[in-house]
Amino acid sequence: MNAHNDVRLATPDDSARLAELLDAFNREYDEPSPGPAALERRLTELLGRAATFAVVAGNPIVSLGLVTIRTNVWLDGGIALLDEMYTVPAERSRGLGSAVLTAAVEEATRRGAGEFEIEVDEPDVDAHRFYARHGFPLRDPETGDRSFVLRKEIGA
Image (cartoon, rainbow, N blue to C red):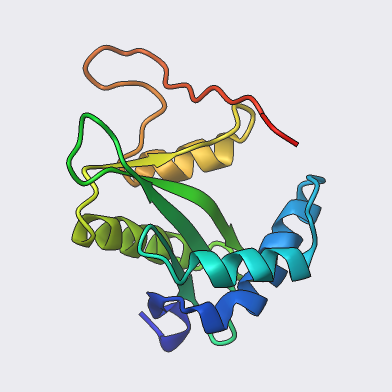
């Protein structure tokens, strides 16, 4: 793997670049964003906590995976959720996403998480294929049941 594909854990000092990338991600898919300044402020705070980490690739950073770990009654170490994963369009199909995802799962395991979750929108078949190649099938291998994450925004 070349140096461009080397992955590392982000620090709060990376927050400005991560904010730019996450804002670009949402704009690419016509999703709302609070803007880079608000994202940078949130990322600086979150990356300073043990329950949130980001794995990044590139110098400058061109790929990221942002993970939060939440407590859970069924698992001592909690559940890791891949909140966001993004690679800039010009750098896709070069193995960066695979390297970032693999490192994110390894880091979540190192931090004691007992499960790793990924949310994917139903029409995003490319993402479904990508995650399935990495051991995250759309259907439960034992039952054949489809996986769903249901969501409702609350609060202001």
